[in-house]
Image: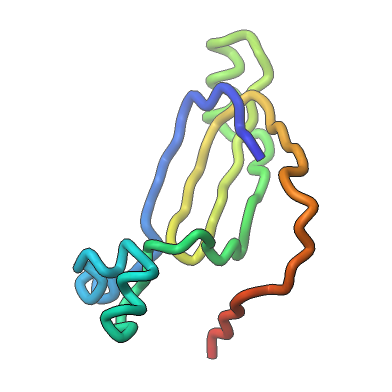
Length: 114
């Protein structure tokens, strides 16, 4: 999925302060290194995935999208994307998507929060 003509983007971490402190070392930015050093406690940033929950939400007629629509004389939209590690709110023109793989492989990993 590609958001086009992004004119405003706000990024915030969803990882707590204590977890950041535990996860500051370089091995947390590379999954292979993290496993090599014994999988220490902390948040592993170096993965090729993120828990997409609660996911993407279209924010409807947000003030920011209306303001940008007026400025650019084009329809603009607003959405939020939330995962386990970040929250993004953006104002954009369009969303484009395309199928990038025929892969139907087995799920490699699951995470269950208790």
